Length: 397
Image 1 (tube, rainbow, N blue to C red):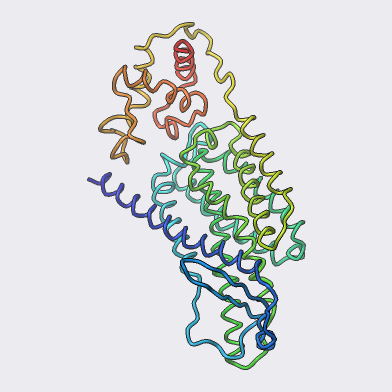
Image 2: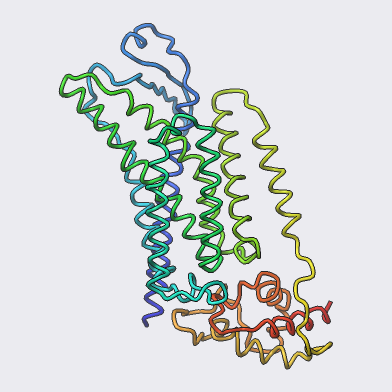
């Protein structure tokens, strides 16, 4: 019953996270587009009122006229819509899922003894340190002398993020490293909203109410952090789906793959942010495509396992079935015996010889090519056993 209830909590948590994430990212994308698509007001009266830009658009059978004020209107509207709860709820639900899956279930999803023999408290502490440290380090960088030099700051961020990805992949399982990297970026994004953008907007409104001159720094900082957030968006979305693709987090150079895809996502957003303003250079898209194609080529499977000394030159199905029964069916059974699993992952079972033969490619890919399974190597599969599976699989081809 506990595993069943945990499945429901997991399902509902993921659902809430996905819904609120769509709302936040959708609003973020829209306002980045809006800000970069504004035209000079056609009406002098609007300009005199402080309108700095406007745009007409059509959607859902209606015409919309959006205007942006340089600072604030002469009179504040009665109803002012804030866009903040989408960000907060996405972060809260995301942290809930991280705590549920990767901290409460750290021995399954975060800790891999083959990478580093961590205790559960130590793994959680490292995760918290990376997430909190990521925000404070990023915020310090933005407020430092480098904050006004975007290209230099981007280069520094790239180096720092590469180092963090490398270190995470050297202490956590690939899956756990990816998720904590994404949680760090997501925390930076929501930190920008909570600590910079919203307080700045509130101060502008308070200045209006108090009759004092508004501080223009709030607009400058808010704009900078909003643009940074849009560059982080696609890398975070990749991390959200990465646990389905062991070829990335299970690769020997998983940290480099993570950084390469992070760079690809950022370059795509760089292009679209520029495109919103009009004609844009295709160089960011070309660079992203080149990195992606290079990644696909470099990640292509090659000779993966060299048989251990004394390993047989040929392998019987019964031998492989014994390994699978010992190392895999605790999870991949009609009724899993591994705590925390109510049903077999992806509904894949290896209970019969026919099951194993039919799904030979999947078994080989996950246990030999990526070594992503058994998850966290909970059952202690050996390199010799992986080599036996490899030999058997090659006999079938």
